[in-house]
Image (cartoon, rainbow, N blue to C red; front, side, top):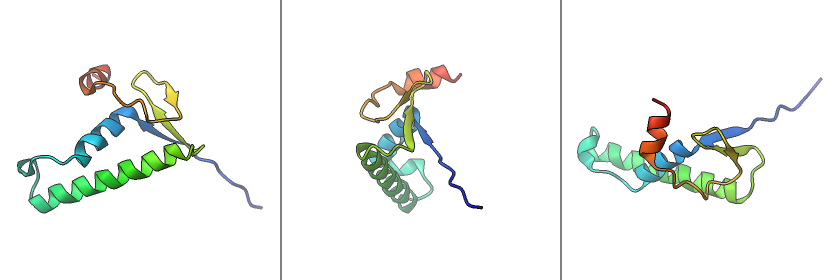
Length: 90
């Protein structure tokens, strides 16, 4: 017997905001070394590029999730203020 399992990945807007921030880079003093900072920046850029491409392709197994719990099929609206999102979870 074989069957398929469908999975839907929900990416919170908070995660997208943080990935955007990390992909722009940061001051090296926040990390163990400049190499670590660069590794983190590069990884975040790759994640943002991948997620943007998948959302643009309208991947039916991918959703964005707002702080209020609303699901979106796009990440074009990721302008929520980080402080508002953080206060929502406190």
